Amino acid sequence: MNVTLISSGLLPVPPRRGGAVELYVLKLCEALRRLGVEAYVIDRLWNNTNKSDHIVRVKVPTLVDSKILTNILGRSRHLILKEVAFGISVSRALKEFEIIHANTAWVGCTLAYKTRELRARLVYTCHNPLWPEENVHLGERVVRLIESSAMKKADAVIALNETMKRALTEKAGVNRDKIFVVPNGVDVEFFKPGLKCDEVNAKYGLEGRRVVLFVGRVTHGKGVHILLEAVKILKDKYGLKDVKIVIVGPLSGSFGDEGFTNYVQRLHKYAIKNNIDAVFTGSLDQEELRYLYSCSHVLVLPSYFEAFPMVLIEAMSSGLPVIGSKAGGIVDIVENGVNGFLFENGSAIDLAEKLYLLLSDEVLHKKFSINARFAAETKYSWDKVALEMFKVYKTVA
Image 1 (cartoon, one colour):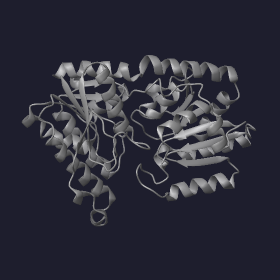
Image 2 (tube, one colour):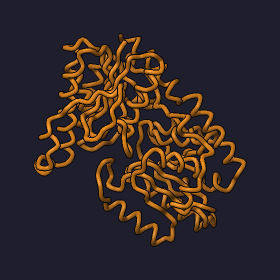
Image 3 (tube, helix red, strand yellow):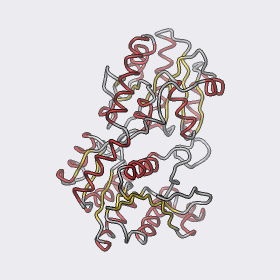
């Protein structure tokens, strides 16, 4: 059996700073190869990319990347065009593969109309966090039409958790019998507890502080403002003055872009006005990020919607307790009162209470830390995920 895994072509594989889907296809490919599967990643041809035996590069027409097109079409439409162009380019390199594993809507839909010609089987993993949501904007409705079309044509669909499986059955109309639940994975040897903290402590001023970590795109949908409000409550109501927030992720709202949004500016102003000790790092590479996980006290993910956030299992693998909102796939990962806490979506008051419980009780913190690491090792290691995925491939081959 030979397999190719494909992302969007919008960010490089391996990802440099951020890019959960790109990391997913790379790590899954590597784990499949350890099982003896002839697996490859297909990525677009980027400048100065590392050569690899298992990453195939395809050339996409240079015109597609033109800034003129961005001005004409607008950023969102231009990204769609780039993804479709990548999908068309990829389709020309697929003749030798038996299993094609797509991971994004526009590439997936493009390839769905090509796999029959190629006599290949199409597997599609849905990473879209908005499927469980009831009320979505017009742009997302269009994405749903495209993605549901790809999934209906696919031979197998991967849902990252049971929450997503229910949503894809009910809202996308995908046949339940061809949906398989296989979670995201984490490199438990890379993300681990007990790393030395001297460098990150010095760089970000963490020594002697209770460090609350956020990792992700710094956008309203990720709920970063709720975290800042909760820390203000920690100071005012609970008297915790030594809390420091480290906010890791692109300040532009999306990976690969520069600058910062009006939302980020408002967060800065709020932190300064309320004397909240917060540092915005921007995007970081995986090497530095793993040290921040290991050297923090808790990871908070206050998102309004999520599919299967990789940051949760990366934190858990690092022995870091997690607190997440009751949104989407977060509830399938965080075991409330076991490896972390869940709080009411959008409630800074509830989040502050959970933070206080965890930051003020060393015994509870230690218990959650041990349980978080155990869950990462037993449920989410890439080798375990790859084995489950291989079973799906064999089902459709």
